[in-house]
Length: 347
View 1 (spheres, rainbow, N blue to C red):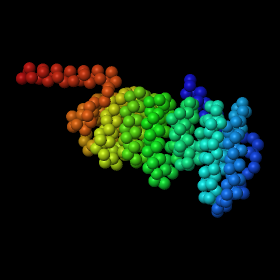
View 2 (cartoon, rainbow, N blue to C red; view 1 turned 90 degrees about the vertical axis):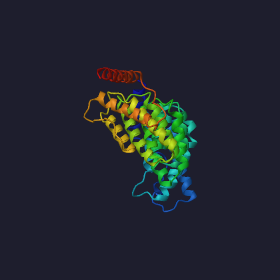
View 3 (cartoon, rainbow, N blue to C red; view 1 turned 180 degrees about the vertical axis):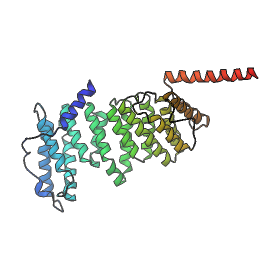
View 4 (spheres, rainbow, N blue to C red; view 1 turned 90 degrees about the horizontal axis):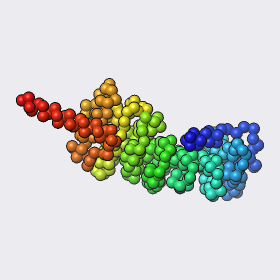
């Protein structure tokens, strides 16, 4: 019910508000200016300030004024044929500054979600600090979702600017929330973010994230299945680029954890085959995996990967197993031992 409630609120806040009055003032005279003066910036800030005050304080029962204000802010700062680079840069900087300054005034759940949505849509590296704080500490699940979404949306800009410090900082924040974040939709954004970074810290947190999340979720859930699919692709990319031996070992442990904890039925029937294909690609080896086999046989082949990695000392030990899988492995070993004994007796 809690998930339904906050999803409903996201839909409400995402609705376009029609027929509402324009916010006071205007900045359209600045759209095409090749350079922005301090006086222009002051005009931009005053306009944004009036918008943001409405966003955080509007008390309409249906919050339509709040939504209209946010839409006005986001649309005005969006690239377009009549928006000069100078205007967009100045507008983005001032918008993030004003949103940050008003963050503590956004007390209600609706106001906080609305503010985070606006901040995410700015797609500015200047917003990273506040988005990280919200991800780590915001009391509302929907706000944390938009903080995570905002970090994902700013990834292209971080990569374009070659900013490894921000990559590491975002990875640090993601690691902090792995044990406490309960929203699979939020975790999906975080895995997507980690998978796009090529920083050592991001690689380390990715391996940790896979091992923690895979053991407490079920890929029978469609969102979790998407997370696991992203995890497989991200691990493959990280392993190919990684040069630290210990980091490669951790990534293989993450692979082994997926082999153990992906338990049918799965929302995405291709997951086990994708996991096997990825392991074949990074190791250059194979086990007895046949894509046409049923779920049970595919699962047993994945467990064979775990034994193979342990035997070759590429991982230090088997990951902890779910009780059902552990019992199945014991039965298989006992069956193999029994069969071997009978064969010896026959000779």
